Image (tube, one colour):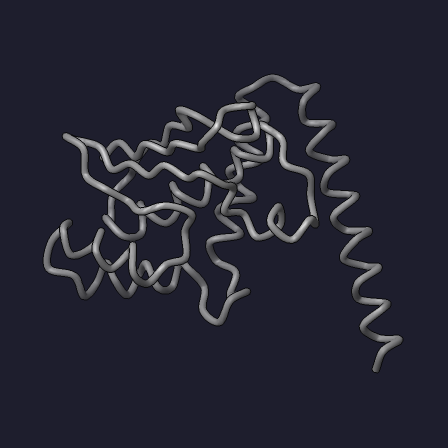
Length: 157
């Protein structure tokens, strides 16, 4: 059993190292391509059932059951793990995080970089399009990966 755990830990470290190298390589391509690729990764993360239930599935359920946007945000904050609360500000929904919420970064699987932060932007986009049942755009106004003290996500509905 211990050998299997050691093997899995080594494979996870290898996969994390490879992913970090790919992300570093993305710094060599244009910004729009970099964003697009990392946002696809974030959408995949939203679908993953890593912590007992895929966030996207929870978002689908909330979107189907909630009566209005206030209830959607209240349930989002309660039922989907994120690094800061989501609040309505005018025509936007915003969240500010004082630390990176990515489980891969938090568990030292990948290095935190500005490029990697676009993955979280993709997660936010996929979750909110599912919650609200309409296209949204997401701005990453601040990012710890780019040297800011916080991450700030703004969802334009």
